[in-house]
Image 1 (cartoon, rainbow, N blue to C red):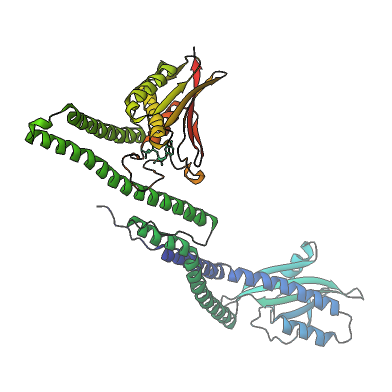
Image 2 (image 1 turned 30 degrees about the vertical axis):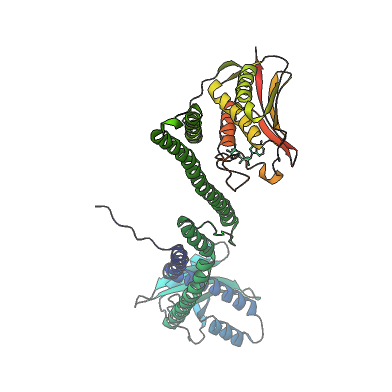
Amino acid sequence: MKKKRIHFSITTNIFISFLSLTVVMIAFLWSLEAIFFNEVYRATKENDIEIASNLIVDAIGSENIGNTVEQIIDEYDLCMQVYNCKDASIIYTPECKSNGCIIHGVTDDTLYFHWLSGANDSNEGKFSEISSSENGEDFLVFARVVTDTKGVVYLLVLNASIEPMQSTISAIRTLLILISILFLIVAVVISFILAKRLSSPIVKMNNNAKKLARANYDVEFDVEGPIETRELAKTLTIATKELGRLDSMQKELIANISHDLRTPLTMISGYAEVMRDIPDEITTENLQVIIDESARLTSLVNDLLNVSKLQAGTQTMNIQRMNLTRAVSNTVERYARFKEHNDFNIVFDYDREVYINADEIRLLQVIYNLINNAINYTGIDKTVIVTQTVENDVVRISVKDSGEGIKEEDLPLIWDRYYKVDKIHKRAVIGTGLGLSIVKNVLLLHGSRFGVSSEIHKGSIFWFEFKIVD
Ligand code: ADP
């Protein structure tokens, strides 16, 4: 069976992590104390005993040698004995005040000779070793050969207990406990503050993302914090705005499409009903209305299908050599004939026929949409001029109208799906907002350059380019 993992909030996670680090550090401190305390104590004692022996040697010859030596052995908590090396006799034994001793009261010479030979064998005339007393306590014994100003040779023997005193141990333990408690308190406070600070941008963003998930596109992701969270916030804000824009466009589109679908459907059913009820009304004109409205419905549905196929990337391209000039000229001619009764003046200006490699059906959609827009949006002179220009091996088709033009801030947006400059729905003129999206996607699939230039109250020129082939 799969184990269920417990998940904490990011604040709790950070808090626990920092606290765990502190606990590990404290545990480490205690282990160090347990493992190394005796070693450190021993090393310190060894150092101390050598320093004391140096001080004692320095005091030889001074007037007040007795007092000085006693002070030194008191201060370093040592026991001392001095032998004359001539006859191995003990010549000086200050009173033993130290914490245990194993050199006083030694009656046989064996130990004396052991220390002396140890000191003589070493380079510096010094010898040290650890010996245990009868009750198992460990002592450090230090022996050193010393020659005084008169040339008399002595053996200086010092001794110190290397078992730390219980009071020392307790003092250190108490200090460690206090330090640990203090550390823990400080760590809890600092971990809490840090956890709050580090997690707050993410917590804020998470709350806003939840609002976004509930389709609230007004949320702002502006958070303080490290670079990455700021960048993430920026990206999310852009994504939110884009989602909001698409959402309102989509809503608008649905409203427009419903309107667009309902109008021809009402016309078709209305005319059909009239013709059914009044046989005299079965006229060519009335039938033409039904045919025109059906054509409008078909083109709307086709537009919708095309745009969704292009966006989904399911469209396969059939690139072939085609006569671009002929394709444009045929479309212009069809429009010219169709719009004749509306006094439209649509011309195609070209000097020779050129061939390009393209998907003819898709490219016709481009030409059709650009001319259709130009006709829909052109001014009162009802003129649309389509021009073919050739430069080197590149052909450019431009469609120029004399309409209201497009504001500069709208220019980058008109290629978006569902975008319409004029939000007020005027069905007679305005389409679904899908035409230019189809144009853009088809031209992008061909890798063509395209664009628009527009002047308010003067009109717009939409253009695209293709490489000419032989
Ligand atoms: P529509 O079906 O609304 O024409 P398009 O995608 O073809 O959709 O165009 C998008 C928007 O761009 C249009 O709603 C219109 O505001 C603007 N537009 C397109 N062509 C022209 C033009 N020739 N003159 C002025 N505005 C245009």
